[in-house]
Image (tube, rainbow, N blue to C red; front, side, top):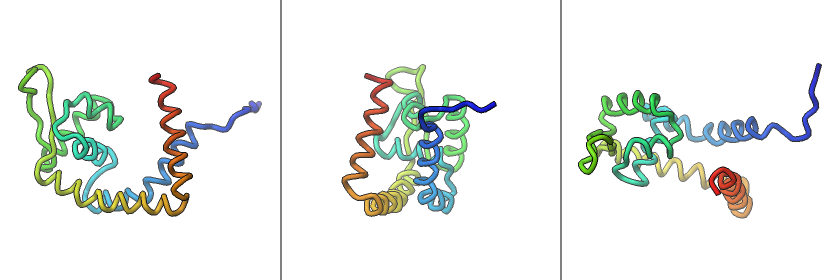
Length: 143
């Protein structure tokens, strides 16, 4: 039995698009010994500084239990530091160490180069349109 769908498989297409984009970034991450998740954490910290772990989990799209393991490995490797939030001891905050910040700085140039390639390949207008459509799609969940 086969079912006929009217619409294309959007979740699969989004995953395929993600993998296409990451195919250009992932080799650079691996050269620096980073997983995709570790890079997402460092990117959040690079953009926001010291961040509560719940926010890191939300912005990096990593489930809490997985984030605990990711942060433990990153702390072991000297990339991040965790401590209790001075204003609320029930919460934990995380920040990039000097080593982590240097890694973000080095990789940001490579990542931005990949975005420039994407912009050149698609064109500035199409890339802006893609960002706009994705933002619009995301806002459907969070009006």
